Image (tube, helix red, strand yellow):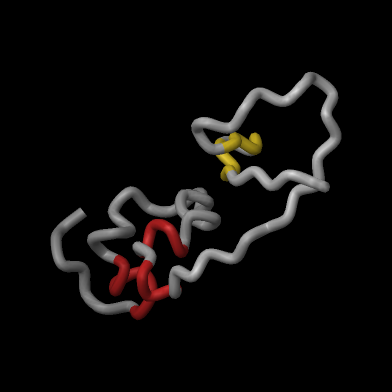
Amino acid sequence: MAETYMGQVQNGVVVLDEGTPPLPEGTRLRVELVEESVPARGRTLADRYASIIGIAEGLPTDMAEEHDHYIHGTPRRSEP
């Protein structure tokens, strides 16, 4: 009979939960994803958009403050 162990991925590596007995080196495993019951609304914006945060390159240094100016052409809020 197969045994079941629980864990999670941390930095791309499967880490078994604390208290799991050590497995012999070379032990073959089958990994089954367990769906978490956390709705999208229960996660932070950073969690939801983690895959795209920080990928934009070459933007103006004042993009955050002046996004309406750059996107919609409105007058700047402050002088450059």
